[in-house]
Structure formats: C-alpha cells, structure tokens
Length: 192
Image (cartoon, rainbow, N blue to C red):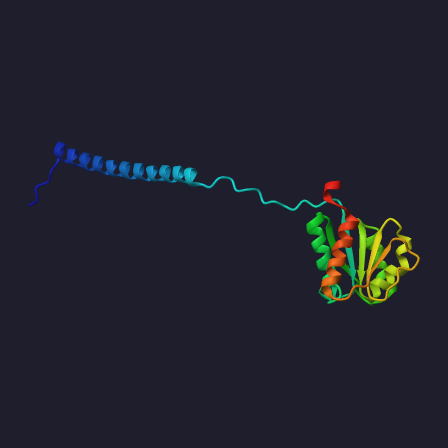
C-alpha cells in the first residue's frame, strides 16, 4: 500500500510547486519583456536619420509641345525633335509634352490636334511629319499668341511671323537646333 501524504505536508509541497511555477513564468515573462525593450531601444538608436525628401523636379510655368504623326516620338523624324525638347527642358525646367495625330494623316485632321495644343498651355508648338507640318503652316496665323517650329526639309514659314522652320538634316543637327530654339523661346529660369 502506498502511503499518501496528506494534511499540511501535502499542501506545502503543492504550494512549493506552484511557487516554483510562478517564478518560472515570471522569469520568462520578464525575460520576454526585456527582449522587447532592448529591441525597441536598438531600433530607435540604430534607425537611420530621416532620409532626404525625394527631390521632385520643379518645372516652370512654361510648356513646349510637339505635334507628331501617328507614330509619335518613335518616328525617326520625331525622335531627334523630342530629344532636343527634353534637352531644353533639363536646361530651362520648362515642361515638354507631345501629341500624336490619330486617324487619317491629313492636314485637316491634324488641324484639330494643332488647335488643341495652341488653345492649351503651349507657348511653343513644334510640328514634325507631313500632316502636322502642313496643318501648322496653314493655321499658324490663327494663333498669334503661340510660336511655332516646323521641322521639315523644304517647308516654308509663309507669311506667318510666328513660325520658324528647321530644315537641318541629320538627327544630331536637328536635336541641337531644336534644343536651342526651345531654350530661346522659353527663356532662362533665372529670368522668372
């Protein structure tokens, strides 16, 4: 027969075991709390300083626009014009944008796209491609507040005093000439 402990001795043993269990739980809880506190402190101490705010490019309130045929700025004739405009934008902080003539590539269809650019915030409109240059040559006098640049060989400015013709050949020459014209038209940012 097994002798059973009872009474006070049994209660003391149970109390002792409960006390030991509580001590272990308290130590584990305290240890976990200490780990959390150390982790938070290390995070605060080692966290990098506030990173520099990303610097967004601040554009001036000047826009040069390009009117192209349906191929847009991927057209071999339009690509150096667009590159020259982007170069001028870097130099002057002027905004540049382009608009493609969709649908029939005719002067009549392109005239609607030209009107859209001339009636918007474009201070300078460049045109490249047969339909865009024909529309611009024909309608430039309707928009005396806008300056125009036709990029085409053999194109004439006609009687319009607000039209410049770029007839340079070769992509590098066109890009340089366009960059210079856009930069001159939009002015130096220091003048603002």
